[in-house]
Length: 383
Image (tube, rainbow, N blue to C red; front, side, top):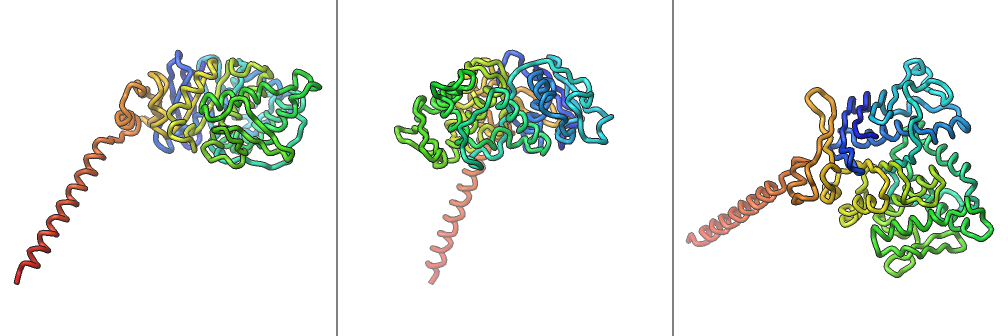
C-alpha cells in the first residue's frame, strides 16, 4: 500500500508522482524548498483519513462535515485502494458531509493508525490549561483526538499536527490514571512506559523508568542522573520528547491497545531534523525503525545528516521534470557513501569544489599580502 502515489492539484505544487520500494518501511523525501515535501505528507495523511474505517465510523457518530477547503489536493490515487477526488457538486459549498458523497471514489479500506507530526511548535512546550486527572474513556479520548485533527484540517494548520498538545498535562493525566482503582481499559501506564523506553533508546542519557510529577503538576524526567523539568529542557530535548510523545499518544488513541510498539501503522514526520542535535539527526530514523518494527514512515527532511544512515530504497529526491510534474527518484545507497557524495547527489553541492575554491581564495589572499609587504619594503628602501 502507498508504494505508487499520484497527487493531482497539490496546493502550490501541481501534479506529483512518487514511487517507493515496496520492501522498505522508510520513505524519506528530500529536495529543494518549494518542491512539495511537506504538502506531499499532508496529502498522504488526508487520503489515509478519508479512507480509514476507524476515522470515518467515529466521525459519522460524532461530527457532521469537513471543510473541503482544508484539502491540500484535488485528487489522490495509490495502490491498495487508497484514492479519492473532490466532488465538483460540493465545490460551491466548500463542505462535504461524512454521511454523503462529498468525496467521490473514497471508500474506507483500512484500519491503520495514522499519525502526522508537523514541524511547527516542536521546540517548545505549550501549557494552556490546568492539568486534569480525568483521562476519559477510550471513546472520549478518540473523539477529542479526531476533533483536533478535524479542526487543524479545517483551519489549514496541519503543520502543527501533534505539536499543539499540552505535553505536561498529558503526562500528568496518564500518571494519575495509574492507580489500583482505575479500570484496566483506562489505566494508561503503557503510554508512559512506551514514551520513556523510546526516549531512552534514542538517547540513553534519558532514564527509561524514572518520571516524577510534583504537587503543582510540573513534570520531571531523569536526564544524566539529574531530574530536569520539561519546561527547562533545551529545544533539542523538547523536540525529541514531543516527537516521541506524539507518536505514542496518536497510536494509543487510534487503537486502545497496550502493545503500542508492535502496532501496524503509518507515521508521517515533517522536517524530522528540526532542532535535533547532529547525533540525533543521524540516528533518529534507524532508531525509530528498530523500535517500531511494524510501522511505515514517511519523512520529509532538509538535512543531509538524516540521509547518511538510510539504506538503499529509503531516500528519495523530489524534482520537477520538464513536463512540470514533480517526480521522485531514488537516492542511491546513501549509507554506503561519503558525506560529500551524499551532498552532491541529493543537493548538487560539490563539497570538494567548495573547499578547493576556499583554498584558492586563501592562497590568493596570502599572495596579495606578500606582494603588498614587498611593495612596502621597496617603498621604504627608496632614499
